[in-house]
Each structure stands twice: as C-alpha cells, then as structure tokens.
Length: 225
Image 1 (spheres, rainbow, N blue to C red):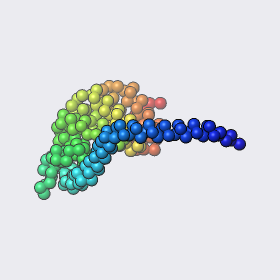
Image 2: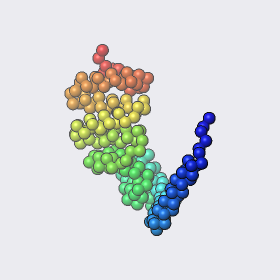
Image 3: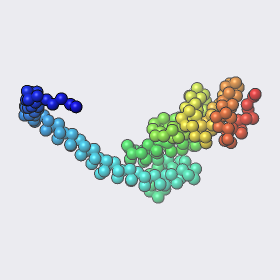
C-alpha cells in the first residue's frame, strides 16, 4: 500500500508546482511577442503550403494530364517525332509539356517519353540526356529507365556505360517479366565484347532465379553444365 504523504511533503509539492507555474508565466510574459510571432509564422507557412497544393499544384497536374493525351497517342502509334514536338490538334508535344508544366508528375514522365522517342529516331545523345534527367519514382520505372540508357549507350558504342546501365536495370526490379529481360541484354553485351564466361554465368543465373519465364527457356540454350 502506498505511503501517504505527510502534510509537510504535500506543502513542498504544492510549492514546487507553484514555482514551475510562475516560471512558465514569467517566461511567457518575457517572450510573448516572440512566441506569438513564431506561431503566426508557422500558421502562415502551413496555410501557404496548403494553398499551393490546392490552388496551384493540383490544377497544374490536372491540366498537364490533359495535355499529355495527344502526345501519348502519337507515341503509341510509334510516331515518335510527332510525339516530341507536334502531336496534332494544337496539342503540346513532350518537349513543350516539360517546359509548360515543370514541377508536375507529368512533366517528369514526359522526360522519359522524350528519351524513348529520341532513342527510336536515332538521336542517342539526346536520349541519354533526357533519360538521365528523368526521376524514376518506382523500381519498375528505374529498371526501364536504365534499360533504355543501356540501349542508347550501346548505340553510341559506349560499352562501359551500357554495361553499367544494364546492370542497374537488372538489379532495380525483381519482377519476373523485367529483371531477366535486362539480364539477357547484359549477357548479350558480354558476348559482343567477347566475355563468354561472364555471359554464360549470367544465363545460368536467369535459369536459376527465373526458371518459369520465357527468358529462362532461351537462356538454357547458352548454359554450359
């Protein structure tokens, strides 16, 4: 059973509480303007952030999404040059969308689309620059970004960067329809460079890690037991 405090102890406790309260009141009185100023500043910052999100960013995101329609349509038709600059019906191409809607998710996505367009029309250096500027938000988009960079570097005969990019693409995602695809590309690059042992090792990894995929069936032809 807890010991009941004596009268003296109770009085001392009350004195401590009063002292703490008095100190708090004194501190507030002394720094009242500063405390109120900080509170007001925080409220203004929160209000400004919410206003930015609701009245500026959200409408721009929506407008950018609508602007992407024709460019994405031309991209789906493999009309890469049109998708870049002149998709038709007065719509903006990916390059204009990047400029007009900077800071939106769509502007970032347009960088990836533009990189793929450049890759397909043979402007490989531009493809590299555009793809490097794309901020890949997921493991899957990281894989496709680095895979496309690997293709662009391969076309430029920059095999060191192509190899590094394909490695990043293969390691970015464990999805069975993605990782072995880029592992195969890396193995083919090794073969091109005369690195047969490294290629064979990679083919074997494909069969072991992704045994039920089509890529595994293809890789089995190159595995030496």
